[in-house]
Length: 186
Image (cartoon, rainbow, N blue to C red; front, side, top):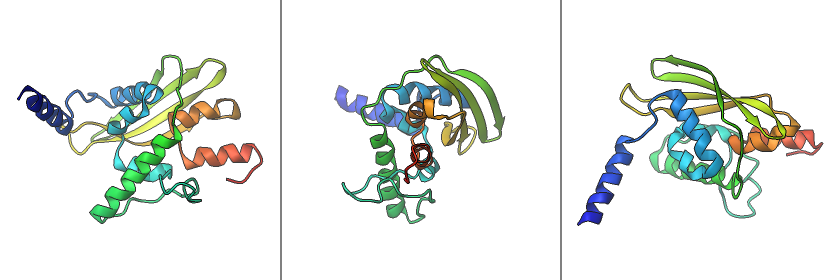
């Protein structure tokens, strides 16, 4: 009986976002903390539209389209949307498989809130690599809903910090840039 109550409470907390970060900056900071240790724990902080943008999808092993997809909106039909979202979430996690990201304390440099949309930027410093700025665009359904990361943009990505940038926010775009800098086609 106690176990059933604990599971019910855990489900209710997940549904109501108990313990969710309170502000857009808290959400972005929580993402940075989680993505560096266990990326799967960062998934609840990401909006569905985030996964449409990174263009990484899990597919059948050996499928040549695994890395070659381009950003596209998620389908509107519920079952197809759910399948595509799950494939995007798995693709995002697979891109980070086994990696551990270490960086110094992120420095908040901007936070703007306009209704149910927000923008937050952090300067992220690494040991032995140049720093970069990671900007988060966040949304929420209404004033009582938790903030979710809808998009991530990075400034200051250079070959010397590309690996760190990719782990902070894996995307088809960063993969394309890496190949470009190496003189290869993606």
